[in-house]
Length: 172
Image (cartoon, rainbow, N blue to C red):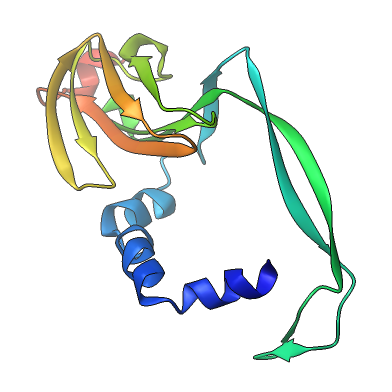
């Protein structure tokens, strides 16, 4: 219920779990980066999955820190692709691109992204950096697979060439 949602934010276990995400400097940097593109989806599953949630309706008049609780809820639903990939260029000429792999399904899945499918990425052997864990994952040739990505989970990556790219070589 809505009260539990408000209360969970003040739960130290919840705060400890979300703090690394909302304070992640690399994620904030990617959010604020502008290389002429705000980010877009570029691939998704043809298979759709249903999601349902409870939507608040009306107000009960019981304020909690200035907010009112809903008087009731109604069930809402929508379809989403089983998985979906987004990208955002961070530097010109494919020098760095953020990629978000999202698993919308209720079960874990291996999600593979081919570097050639990411708009603007020119490398075939690419360096992959995990934004959430703040770790270099290594160099990968042609693709990267997020193994057993949890249900309703995501992995947030940056993809860049393994060697410094001379932009003049890429301009034709």
